[in-house]
Length: 302
Image (cartoon, rainbow, N blue to C red; front, side):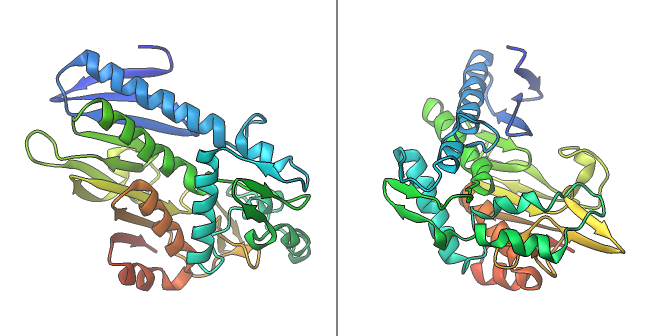
C-alpha cells in the first residue's frame, strides 16, 4: 500500500485506513481476497480525495471557492455541484431556514476552540447581513452570490462522500462493506454470516480519541444504511460556566439554545442520517420530539 493508506487483516475481514476531510477514514470489507480489498480501498481513497478537492472551502481551486470568489457575478456550475446546491436549497426549506450553507461566514467572529472568547453582540450583528440562502440567486446552472457572502458545503460534504464511496465499492464488488469517515458511516449489505457490522455511538463525555472502542456509549448492529452524529463534543466555548455549542442559528448568529451535547441518527443513507442529526441539533430543546416525529432510530445525549 502507499504511505497514504494501510490495509490489515482483522479476523475474517480486511480493514483499510487513510486520512481525508480532516478525519480518520476506515473501510471494513467482509472478503478474503487481499487484492480485491486493496482495490476497494483505493477506490474509496481516490473518491474521498476527489470530493474533498472539489468541495473543500480550504482549497483555492475548489468549486466552492470559485463560487465564493465570484463577487456578485453569475457563475455556471457543473451537474454534481448543481445537485448539491439543489440539496442545500431543499435543506434550507425543510428546516425553515435553520440549515443554511451561507452561515459559514460566522466563523469570522466565532472560533470554537474551547476557550472563553465569546464575540460581542455587535460583532455578531455586523456579520449577519452576509448570512441567508434567500439572498442568493440560484437558477440552474448559474448561482449568484452577493459580494462578501460565501457558501460552505461542509455540513453535507462528508456524508455525501461516504455514500459516494460506498456506491462505487458496491459497483465493483457485492461484498459487505462498512465505510466510516470520522464516525459518519454507511453499510451496504449484511455480512456473509448473516449478521451486521457492530457500530459504537460515541459518548461525548469520553476523553478518549474519536474511534477508540472505549469512547462508545451505545452499540448497534447495522446490516444496511447510514449513521451520522452531530454535536459539540470537540467544538465549543466555555465562559462563566456557560457552554456555547458550535451549532449556530443562522437567523440570530448565536449558538442554538437547549441543544443536546450530541445527536446520532440511523437512516437509509449517511447523507439522510447527517441531515436529520443536524436538523435535530438546530431544534435545540425540541430535538427529541423532532426525531420522534421523523420515526427514525436515534440517540440524544444531554
